[in-house]
Image (cartoon, rainbow, N blue to C red; front, side, top):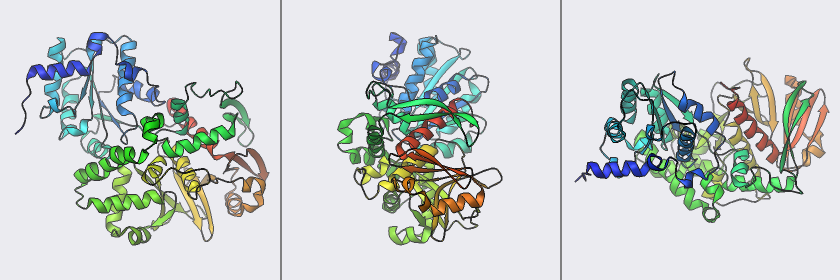
Length: 489
């Protein structure tokens, strides 16, 4: 039998969730937390009023969506928005069970003595707990022209699917990914990347001339590469999620935290309820296999043989896992830069390497799987760049880890990811990379190392050898800076 809550109980709960109605500020618990770099991208969309749309914040579980919402409320209050004109409601709260969004809006307006002509901000957190939320939200956007609705949810796959089905022209989607390596350092370093090493920053920013492209670029130089590499291994093991990054207690048993709060809820609840999956164990078996082999080339035949899941089912499950932001599929090109008509082979990467470390065990810098996890970590940085056409090249015995195709579908640049100094010392051994660069007249290639940094010009191609940790930092920071400056819009 459903429990009927009194109106007074519901009002008390709403006041509890909105302490700024009385105090004028958000709870100190959230206020004391550092803001993610993505805050500067989200907040302009919250205060944007010209386009009548709701903002839908989505992403994997535990990446800090609720904290980001509270930080945006803090900024609204700091910029002078009346404290009564900002309302936050967590839809998973049992007291709101069975209530339509419009009922909650009406009750809020009544509590504060506001009208529908007031410029208001209403937040609905964990929106996925409301059945047919997208229809409710679309109706609110159409009915209340002066209210900005901001919603978020952890069932990322469900939110994305329903947002696209019902929210055309009404919803603006914003995806919050796991932490970049740069963000991880920012959150875990009390000096905001000014980790004191002989009174110097751990990483220094420099504006330098890029000889290959004849332009000035922002570059980064580590002051202590050994310390940076230690932080990079920490990022690989614990760095995808803010709470995991900051808590030594959770890091002592990351498997329980990630399995329970992130993986199990997606595999056993979100995806089965959204797509009608009946064999949850089969889905879990597939994901476990993929997680263990993150960064390896795979085929449907191979996955089917090793996971025991039928090929047609695997195709569907891969789509679902990608929609849930747990994996990223990278397709293959040949040595000529041509795509294959049939994608028989592909690589699958976890969206963050800490997923694998938690499922199995944390790794060290000399672990057998360190190469795959470094590759996964670097791809995790590139996944913050929207719609970037990245591939890997493979032919015969040759392979290039990352190739970017230009608008003419020709290779633009390439990256070979290594956790070794061997090739910086013996560049003649980079036969596959040198062949590929020569064939496509590439001006630059990047080869990652453990701790060596230098440039070498070979046959009109500039080879940049750069520590994998520094490269990961550079990519993550530059992409977020680019997003903030509008380069990827």
